[in-house]
Each structure stands twice: as structure tokens, then as C-alpha cells.
Amino acid sequence: MNELERALTADSYAAPPAHILEGIDEELAHRTTYGAPHTIYAELWHIVYWQQISLDWVEGRETPIPAHASFGFPDAYQESEESWERLRARFFAGMQAAGRHAADGDRLNEPVRCPSLPPLPTRVMTVREQLESLAAHNAYHFGRIVLLRQLAGAWPPASGGFTW
Image (tube, rainbow, N blue to C red):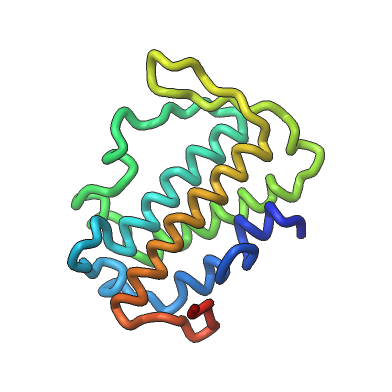
């Protein structure tokens, strides 16, 4: 497993996503924390949202980016329509797909077209660069999930996680 694949699926920079999401029930996923703009559910929904756009781009689909950042987080209706377990399953399916792309060394230097908001031009980067961007994005939001778990007294998970 190369380091990019580890950063997307395993324990490259911190506890693996499977550990970070372990032991979170529906109540904890939707619990609001004073001062925090989003719940654990909303943070993971956001990860899944952008993970799918990144996968679309890597797979040659020029999915447009949202017109406003708020569209990258779920509204109340979207949250009510998808259970925590279904959201987790979507994340893990996308995570595995991203890992497969990262493991495909023959494609890592291929160009990827990434739409921008008008009037900016479409960006072009490599598959590797897009996956590195996805890994960095996920790391940021998984850090927020860990913090929300810490504030809720629900960290570390049973499988372990960094506690420093």
C-alpha cells in the first residue's frame, strides 16, 4: 500500500477513518456541540459530498462544484433522509474507490479536469494531485470529528486512536 492510499484509507497521518467513525451511534452523530458549527453527521456528510465530486473528476465526470459552500453540508431534510449507518457505508465505499485510484500507479500522472466557479477557468491537475487534495480535505474534517468526539467524552474509540 503506497502512502497516498494509506492517507485515504488507513493510518497515515492519524487514526484510520474506520477507528474515527467507530462506536458513533445515531444520537452522537446528530448531537450538537455548543460553539461548533456542525455535528459529526454533518462533517461526515461533507466529507462524502466532496469525496464523490473528487471521484467523479478522477473518473472523467466534470461534476460542477456548488455555487455556495453551504451546499456542501446537509440541510435538515437531507439529514432526515439518510441514516448514520447509510452515510457511513457511502463514505467507506467512496474511500475504497479512492484507495483503488491511489493504488493505480499507471494513472497517477494523468490529467484531471476540475470545474471552477465561473468566471474562473476549469483547473487541470493530475489524479495524484486530486487524491492528495481529497486526503488533505478528509484529514481536516476527520480532525473536527475527533474534536467533537473528545468534547462529547467519546474518544478514543475501542479500537484506539491517538490521544495526545
